[in-house]
Length: 253
Image 1 (cartoon, helix red, strand yellow):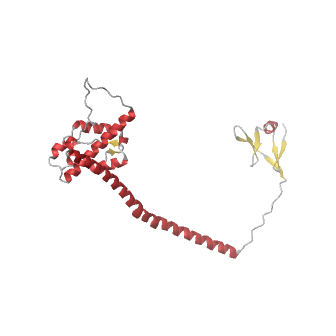
Image 2: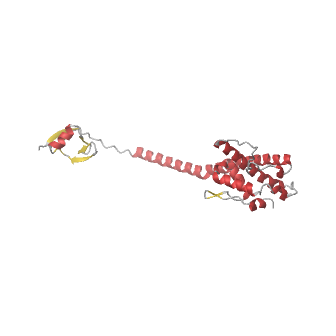
Image 3: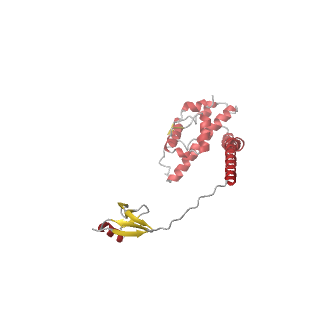
């Protein structure tokens, strides 16, 4: 076994034996920038190599001359720039952003919310006033009637079923909201008679079962509407809390 000298980047490295030299010759190993013989696959250090010479040209770096005036100007400009950045940041965080929120964003969100809620209520009131009483509004979409021999079964896709369920849920919420508003306005004489359809156990059970199985049927605006109506959220920690008869009765007391 003998040593082998290899020149790389102006430095002469010593590979101590034939085995390592063969790896280097076959390109199975290489010398990295730290003077180590590295195996290619897997990449690992084979040997810390000694070197005996370095004939790379020496580059002398001229030290930078001192310029007191220039350095003072640079420091002054840097300090001024830092001051401008700090003041700009404070102005943005403590002045501009709060004003933008209170005078622009927050009122805009409120207007959009009230516009959506008012639109839903107006539509529901129109339906109730045309039929003159909430009792005449059928809840057939919530309560599934048993089929008779004469009735033909209608097949529906999953998408069509979800659409009809969503219509039923929105319809029921609209009835609740309209009943409460008409009662507050003194437009309903016999509250109990108009309340019968809404507190029907089958209707409430269908409402709870449908929303529990698919919470996504309620859009954000509709969820906000129900929360404002009942005074509570329908979902607690992601779990659906069923609607109760007593809650509906409290809306017209």
